[in-house]
Length: 66
Image 1 (cartoon, one colour):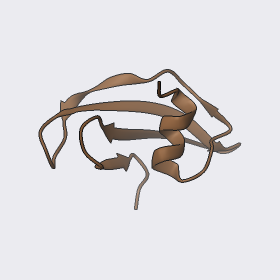
Image 2 (cartoon, helix red, strand yellow; image 1 turned 120 degrees about the vertical axis):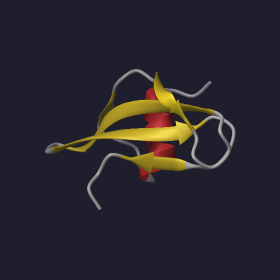
Image 3 (cartoon, rainbow, N blue to C red; image 1 turned 45 degrees about the horizontal axis):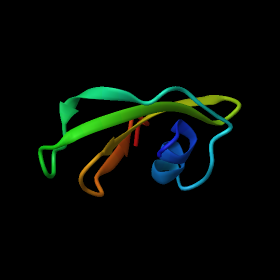
Image 4 (cartoon, one colour; image 1 turned 120 degrees about the horizontal axis):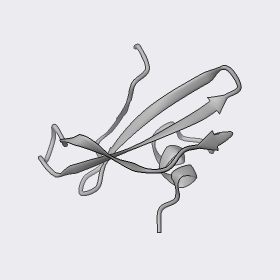
């Protein structure tokens, strides 16, 4: 079972300090059209990120400004 922390780690590449509950992202994957989930987390003391991950393929993104 995927926890909020492990989902954030999949997207971020390292374990976050803290993570919120996993929720449905209310949009479909831009690559395969399947369901996307989201998790909010803190990778550092001064940053909060919302990450998105497709449940069926490898697509992932976050809300950071590039």
